[in-house]
Length: 71
Image 1 (cartoon, rainbow, N blue to C red):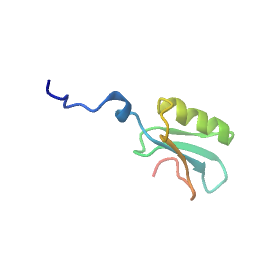
Image 2: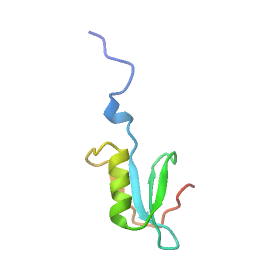
Image 3: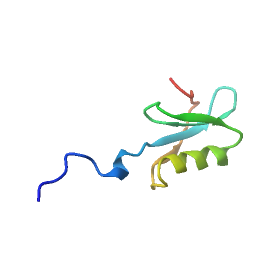
């Protein structure tokens, strides 16, 4: 049986980065810059990122530098 030309659904889900912007607000955004938001706290930002990425292991990382919501 030939393989599908489309990637499995789980690989099509976005990967997210969570961190603080230059003003200390918590940001979660996908690595492609298509979706994201500003959150009241770290837990809320991580929760959003996990939901949007389908709770896949390794799909959410914490930034080591300041983030911009959209660059």
